Amino acid sequence: VDQRTWGRPAHVDGPPMVTHYAGKSRIWRRCCPPRAAGANEKAFAVKFPDTPLILAGALGGPICIFLTTPLRNALTLASQDAQSSAWELLANVFQAGFASGWTGGWAPVQ
Image (cartoon, rainbow, N blue to C red; front, side, top):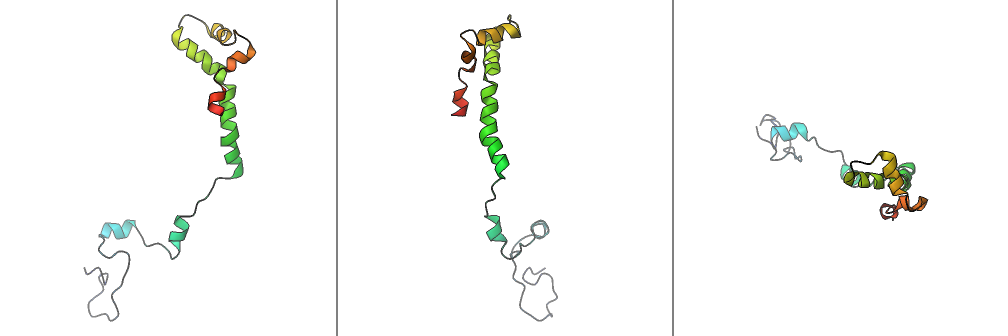
């Protein structure tokens, strides 16, 4: 099959069809149809997420990490101390005062 005529009989008048398929296989033609005019401009357009989604990621994520810092610190202590209970580990996290539980909590937020 002559790909310039797309299998049209040779006796059909008219110029050969010029498409982006020139030199491509049948599988390419089936799987990759031609794009509409102006599709390339749309392909490079950047679409940003909605504002609530941006705020959830920018504010909600760091806040959740910060609020769970005492638990993360307790899990760090638990990895080295298999004998203590969960309450004992949390007591160790807060042994220097309430604010000591958030040691290292600002690192992921900043």
